[in-house]
Amino acid sequence: MKVLRALIVDDERPARRWLRDLLLAHPEIQVVGEADGVNAALDRAGELEPDVLFLDVQMPPGSGFDVLPHLKIRPRIVFVTAYETFAVRAFDANALDYLLKPVHPDRLAETVRRLLTDVEKEASTPSPGEVAPPAEASRSDEPQLSLKDYVPLRDRGLLRVVSVADIAAIEAEGAYSRIMISGQEPMLVLPSIGEWECRLPAPPFHRLDRSRLVNLSSVAEVKALTRDRADVTLRGIASSLSLGRAGSRRLRKLLSQLHA
Image (cartoon, rainbow, N blue to C red):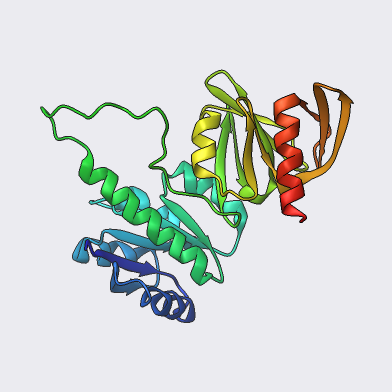
């Protein structure tokens, strides 16, 4: 079993202790040190060369982001913060994940799984001169998401961090996907609908037909227009979702099973 060496950086001792105690449930992660600020983090990181850095964001007078440019060896970064607003910067800084304070054990378990998956992917990457294995049709090796997760979505110059639970539906548009988000404007992103199907939790997400994936928890109404067409009203979404006969039949069947 691969054991990852971790350094916890936080200016609050209780926060460091809480995270260290939670990590005791994960033998794959060995906490090798702690630091209480930017300078201490750089010193300890240079000394210990950890595989993972659990990095607090706000550490007055500095910030966790101030640590990154000065790391001689870049470990995997997991930001820890009390504010969701820092999530965008975390992903822009190529962090593997971020955790909201107070850190919940289930959410930490997901982060550990992502860390291990990332290590496995790196280990399977061919060295220079080796031939890479053929690419899969979908990125099913990406970490599975839960309703408690947040995902970064890029639509041209816009980066938005969205709760998985707020994704109401996804429509295929060629190699792209249109993400319908409760209370927000839709976004056109690169991952295909097949890739989303592999990563989103089922239930409540289900593929209705070739072009549509729906969060059953977001379905407010299904209205039959003709024998072959129905409109679906989704909570928090201004425009309805149009389904053909096969899609509407599958949706009705799923909803009847859900409420049985």
